[in-house]
Amino acid sequence: MTKEKPSLEMTGRKVLVVAELGINHGGSYKRAELMVAQAARAGADVVKFQHYRPDEILGPKSPFLAEAKACQLTRQEHGLLKAHAEYMGLEWGVSLFHPEDVEWTEGLGMLKYKVASRAATNTDLLREINNTRKPVLVSTGLLPTPRDIEAVLEELGDCIVTLLYCVCDYPTPIERVDLAKLGKLSSYARRIGFSSHCPSSIPTICAVAKGAHVTENHVTCSRDLAGCDMASSLTFEEFGDMVKMIRTIERMP
Image 1 (cartoon, rainbow, N blue to C red):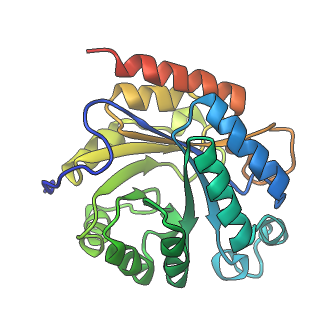
Image 2: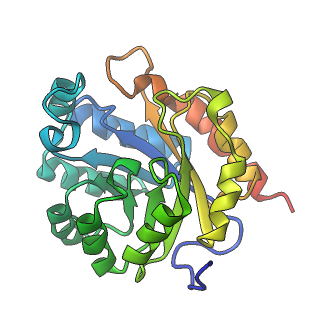
Image 3: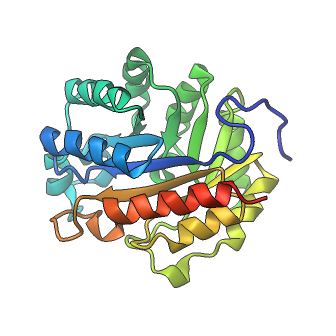
């Protein structure tokens, strides 16, 4: 059943728009800094990165291991990017995959947490995040059953949770996006959203029209750049056009 908790983030129809920069910076701090500025100009509310130890998360035989290792920024660089994002009027965030990293992001003053689909069954991570009592966005792409979702919500019982509908295909073809599943998440949480891996803004715009409180899209400077997430990303121009449409939908009764 839906828990009645006061919202710390938004009231009304304001949609939280997250620009998932992830590892699309390719390990370049300068490119990451530029991407933050581009996200601000495009109208994002939040810029989010990823921080993990590739050997543990991907495994030694992953074809993406070398690239993932090359794309990791240091903790110091993330701290600088947080300051840069705030200067640009954005909230900064980073997806965590290791429970011991929560102490680090708490030291930086991260305002909300994002749990990726791959990390949603990591109970040690969920418990550390729960101890912060901060808002949490949870992607549900690898939570196939109601009991899986309920287990995550139980671990995050002291937090305001937004459940994000997500398809774990990279990239996601439009015909694989079943937005009927978005509405079903409202049976578990008051706040729902959509985390897209589709190189089109259409599913995200439709998700907002169907009541999403949060959107998350991978964004890149160019899909022609090398990188495992480029094909799943919008360009900043596409992202900016999408944000304008979202803000228009917000004004509709």
